[in-house]
Image (tube, rainbow, N blue to C red):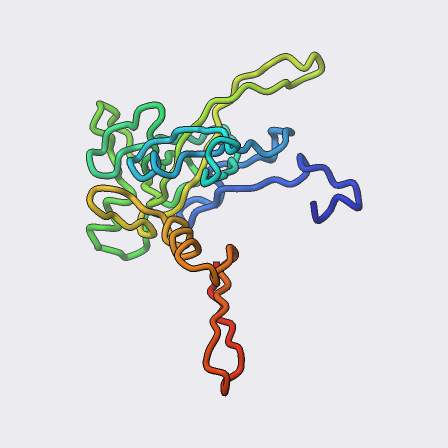
Length: 214
């Protein structure tokens, strides 16, 4: 929308999923299609499930956009971080990566946690060593027209939800920061969506506006 005045198409903007252990895990640069949007049921997300919904029937649905396709010579697995088993279709989990572009170790580190990050092994028979990103996401298949004949091509794209360290587990349910923000926004009429709190203080004081970063 910002660059619409200069006729810059949405397909010209390429998002990248970058990580400290791999500079490019997924990219949109060669897809040549508009960003793919999904509206998800936030309640299902708290149960670890990915359930697309119609935003017209679910006003509190969460909008997510894809990070593109996994490049050639890169392999991504979505793994349950606790059981280390592959997630089923419709589940999200930790993003594990195999690629020549992955960091293989931290120089001089003897921390067992670091070693585990670089040698993640799936419990389903795959003996390969994956790099564990610590980020949550899921793979989703879509069909889009491509090529001169605009024939439908099925592609698998990556959606990134956020870091495991940013989630809060309460009674077995996973909550993302946006859940907490949304709850706070709805708790009082003076809190408006956008992270702004307008508070009225005694008349001898000035009107006070508190800003919280998104």
